[in-house]
Each structure stands twice: as structure tokens, then as C-alpha cells.
Image: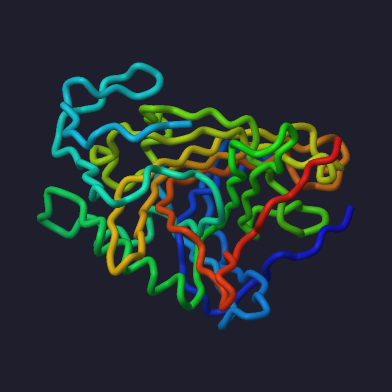
Length: 304
């Protein structure tokens, strides 16, 4: 089941922290670093992208902006969020409501050169504007940790499913990226992250509930040879937005997980029991080419 290579290893690329956790048959879960890689260059786009790697420690109307009360905040599992300095999303009146569709470039939260911009030493509140500008400097190279496409939720009765790609998450036999799909949309008026998910966040106390969506991560039906099961979760919400010179700037945050169990075929070939990947990220909308078209994964139709 060959699939076209959507990226390639990039020597000398920037380093990122994605927090993959390998689950091998001979040892317990462990976190590993993965090398950077490149995505294919669009016809009208400029330079080739590289993946940024990192080392890690473990519809919906917009409500008026308001400050969250720490004592009222809980995670999806019902656990109380520890009180602290909480961030507040205050979009300007002209900024459109959240739209979770289209192509996005994602950046691991544990990247040190982004983390120190997000919350400089001694700061009590995140600097979303500075983080957004910093991310754009890497996007222009173009560099990213991963990328995704989110299909509009109001399409036909058989809409294209979302997609997720990180070329370091690859089938051990074909060595091509897993064809990961994002399915079963659930919109949340107040999206939160579980205590386990928040372990991957940089400064999780600043992540407050807000409108967002949840999707299941799965493997496409064309990619299941040697795979016994594959599942996980994808969550995303907007944390900052503003308008400048007629252009809307948006910053998103989220969490991704993907657990793959190999069948006897792969285990007999020495690939172990499977792999477990998870990481928290910041995201921005994908760049556009000279015609105004987004540069990204785009939609895909699933066949069963």
C-alpha cells in the first residue's frame, strides 16, 4: 500500500518537541525525539519547509469576552484547574467568530524559542501577539512541527474528512507518513483539556476554557496493513485574535494524540507492539500562494 511521500528528512533543520511516546514490546512507554523533515514545495511557494523538532516532558456563536474565574474552571474530566494568573481572550469587535476549518501549520509548545516568547521570564500573562509574530518568521521559511486540514462542518452529507500529517509519524514497514484522518466532529462551547493532556502544555495554568472542537484521530482504510488498531484525539481552540490593516490574525492552541497497535505481521518483523504519540501545540492558519489558495494538506475523501 504505497502512499506518496508528503515530506522528506531535512538535514540541519530546526529542532522541535512533539512528545512521541514509543511503546515497544520489550520496554515500557518512553518519550523519544524525532528528526526534522520537509514538506513538498507548492508550485508557487518559495522555499522548502522543514519540520521543527523538540524534546518534551511529559454553528458556535461567540460569547462576549469575559474574564474566567479560576475557582470555576475545571477540566473535561471534572478536575479543578489550579487558580493562577489566567489569560483572557479579548477579540476586537471587527474580528470574525471562530472558524475551525481550512489548513493550519502547528508548532510544538515545548520549542524553547517559542516558549520564551509566549511567557518571558518574570511575565505573569502570555504575550500572544509576540508569539504569533515569532511563529510567522518560521512559517515563512517555511518551517513547522506538523500540519492539519479541518474540513468545514456545514458541507454536504458526505463531507471530506480532516487530515493530520507529521512525516516523523511513519509506518515502520513502508517508512511513509501515517495517513491520519480527523473524524467525528464535536463542537464545544467551552473546550478544556484533561489533566493528562495538560502535562504536554507549556504553562498549562494559562490555558482557559473557550469555544473549540474535538475530533477523533484514526488511520485511513488504505493504511491499515500491519496495523491492528489506531486511535486518538485532536483538540483545537482559538486563544487570540485581532485585526490589523484589514487582515485578521489568529492564534490557536490544541492537543494531539495517536496510539498505534501493530498486528502480528509487524511484530514478527521486529517492529514491536506499536507507537504512542502526543503533543500540545500552537497553530496558525496556513500561508497562501500567489493566487490566494492555502498551502496545505487540503481535503480528502474516505473510501470504506
